[in-house]
Structure formats: structure tokens, C-alpha cells
Length: 114
Length: 114
DNA sequence: GTGGGACTTGAAGATGTTTTCAATTGGCTA
DNA sequence: TAGCCAATTGAAAACATCTTCAAGTCCCAC
Image 1: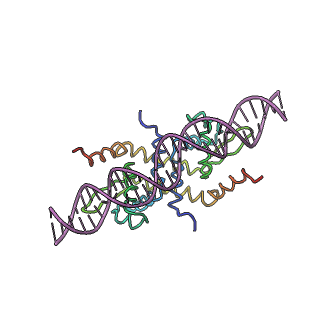
Image 2: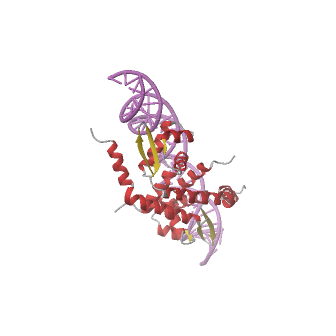
Image 3: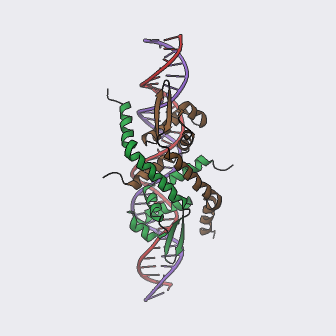
């Protein structure tokens, strides 16, 4: 019996749940890039970026291939781009109309001072 | 200046990254449900479910309304359903063809015994 | 085969999340 | 109002993830 699908989904989303990893995926949406370019586009130290790339690799979300002295990363499925688009849609909706701010305000109403 | 979008995205995905929370969202895809029904559909203690529901509420992903002595939960946006579909597509791709198993094998090749 | 650049790894402390249990709130009915 | 059921909350221990830095690998040029 395999890992239940809801567990696989949770693991997958957890893997996406880090700002550096999100930026990596966004940068890779337009095509493969060498680590050097990722590093230039993301404010983080090389070793930290490597750690996050390793997380994405282990999850099978990106692939890496060595080309001479540099290493090139690519998305392993273009569906990832779809997913990021869907996420952006949701966040745009949420942040402008009902999102975090409003949610927290609603929260506050329930715990009024007294 | 607001929270950068990549940070908001990361937070959002992190919020989805828990098996109980995923199951809640899947159950809510077909319409609002009282906590009682969520509890019946997910193997977890009431207080634990409540904690996870609170996480989803704080993130603005679900809403809750009290109806008499029970509380009813609903998705706050139907786009969430799209997202879960996109995720399922990716996972199906990944798990049958290039997924975790293969990724780990590839990993292993790089660290061959010696 | 030595030196240097590009990238990765291991390990450990700092931080954050999950689980659990006891205590609590809100609402219903006697 | 007392008792009960549904659901939530607070708090602390257990557990997982992140960051950081020193050390390591791989490749190219000399």
C-alpha cells in the first residue's frame, strides 16, 4: 500500500512552502537556469540556496544537470507553472477582498476587549 | 510596502502542507460541512482537528459560521478546488513516471558505494 | 597535480510546527 | 440555572525545518 494521496499532497505543498524555493520555481518557469543565475536573482547565500535546491530535487520537482563547471536546474514538469498560476489567482483574490487582513479583523471581532 | 508575493505564496503553500488540512479542503470541495462531518471523515481527535481548522481560518482559506450548536465550515474561494486539481495532476505525473522513487534512485547514483 | 571557482554537504544551534490534554466557551433543554 | 454536547483554546513537550559555517567534491586552467 502506497503513501495515501492526501499525505503525498501535503508533502508536496510543504515542499513549496518556503520563500526561496518559491522564487526558484518562479525563475525556472521561463526555462532552465544555472545556479549562478538563481543566485543572482535571489538574495541568499550559496550554501543556503543549495540546501533549498536539494529539497526541491529530493521531492522530484526540479532536476539538475552538470554542464562543465556549472550546474543547470530545470522544472521537471510544466504543470508546476499551472500550479503557481492557480496559486497566484487565489492569493490575488484573497489579498484583495477577503484575505488575511479581513480574516484577522474578523478574528478580532470575536475577541473583543472586555 | 506589503509582504512580497513570493512570501505570501510560501505561507499559503505551507498552510496547505499538512495531511489533515488537505483532507479538510478535499471534503469541503463538495460544499460546506459541519465539524461533526469533518470529524467523521478524518481520523483525528476533535481538538487536533480544531487546531488545524484554526490554521486554515487564520489563513483565510476557509470560513466558519455557527449554526445553532454546530459550526459549519466552507471554502472561502472555489479557486482552491482548481488548485487541488492542479496539484493532483502534478502528483499523478510525478508518481507515475519520474516521481519520488526515480528521483531517489537518481540521487543514489550520485552517491555510489565505494 | 596544484590552485581556484562553482556548487554541495554535514552538522548543530535557533526557530517553528504538531500533538496532546486539561480547561473553556457557547448553546440547547430540562 | 444545572447539565450536557459541540467545538475551541492555551500551554508544554515532542518533533521537524532553517540557517549557518566549515569542510568537501568536481571541474577547468595552469
